[in-house]
Image (tube, rainbow, N blue to C red; front, side, top):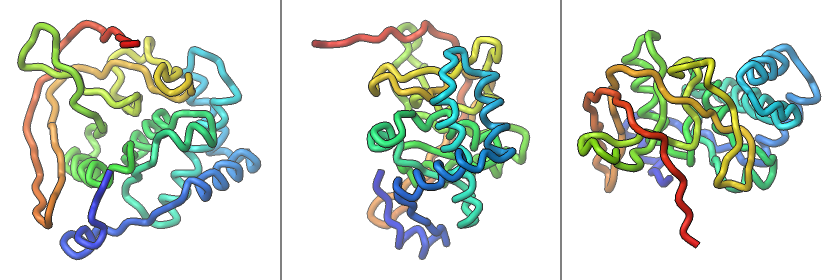
Length: 227
């Protein structure tokens, strides 16, 4: 995603700290080799949710989560926006989605596709929630098949575990669309009232879209392939 870093500094005093995937991988390696308490606790948490039992890749997801958190703390960042595909999959053979979810639940909103404006929005929503709820980052995807006033909110699987509707059914799984890479948070979100928000800008003009919505039920989406 594109943003104007200079404008964000001048208009809103928002500072960005770019980190290369090479540097991130080095931090991941450090976390695995140190085998510290935070890393081991993250492994235990993922194993308690995971139903695939792929321990080797669980370690990688845990290392990614710890590495991102350390870098955010080093640069005193309130949020993270990660380049989530496809370079990371080629380097680490995992998806970052579940690591994003864990960090968001810990109070560091972590969003996909280096979406800086999405990260800023998440920080805003975290602030207005005043600790009573956790923000989640999503795309507006497909229309509801029977309800013309409903859409599916979805984004690969980076939703916080605290927002899962049924934690007994929640799991960490593999991507069907990125060569079966592991690390997708797979659960339906709990029902309730939502604040839908988006901070964005173009040509120096910035706006905040904000509105309210209610959750609804719908059928599980069916994968279609056109060959």
